[in-house]
Length: 372
Image 1 (cartoon, rainbow, N blue to C red):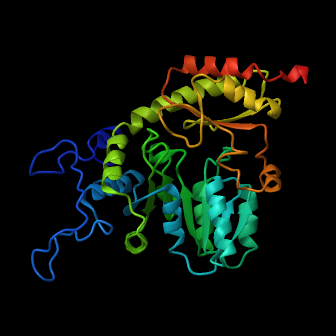
Image 2: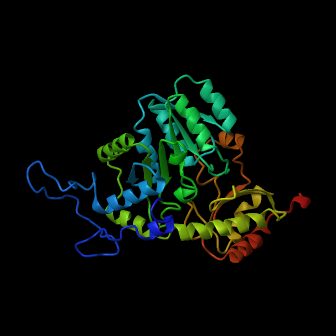
Image 3: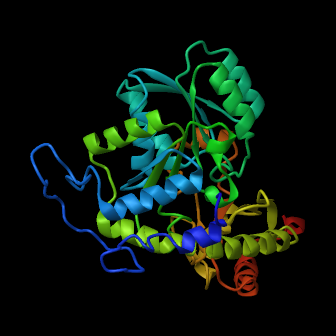
């Protein structure tokens, strides 16, 4: 942010946007169509799929947060990914991090089945560079960092340089860290996508996505394609998103503080064989001593809720093997480390001591490493 600090900017989103009434909370413009003053003239709003006043406030804020040229708010995170990949040519070859959200893998597999695009996967920075060097024609790189759910981290700036030297585009899924902790566009990425359902909106009551372009030209292409394909966010959902963004910095600060405390304590427990936490953000993955005891563990939890999704104010536990990554073939996911002993925690804003106590008592169902 340039003028004001990010917390101030977030709190002020939508304020002073309605000079007619002076409303502090941005109005929800539910109209699907808008009158034209004269033939050949427009107020800038014609049809709500193309542009909506409430969504415009949201999109302007999201573009500013990511320091991009233009943002498009979509109906889901997957719609945002589909939108960006829709800019690539037919038959595009795409390199992607192997450890990624199961829904992304499912969509990439669908594109391959339909003959729309082909994909090759890498596990590390070194493997990426080798794969890129050995592949003559690459249209784009798709990257999560930290990855979901193994929390691998990549050097976006280095990958961006290599990508552009190859004449390709870099797309980064920034869902886990948000622009408050990482700004891929400033590090060289061409596009950023988010599941807005997660940390950005943060209340488990909104399905949304975000796509942000670095250049004005790419932004205009995204906007055109969103209007053409129709997966834009509805006015009321846009208002909910605006409302949620106002507390993003406060929520994320508490979630990150809690996650750091929990990760440190979980590493000390004999029932936990590994804790995967990058030291930033609100997501933790852990491995336990006996996967067979996971059903009992889930039933023993009192505060953590066993559910899919992440980033909300309520703490959740997800079992990727059967939930978020269940569509990835077993042999594939276990080969890169997504094994049945892995649990993923989304840390909320509750009291850290209460969360720790809940995990400690539930983890008692597992044998300790010494008794195995």
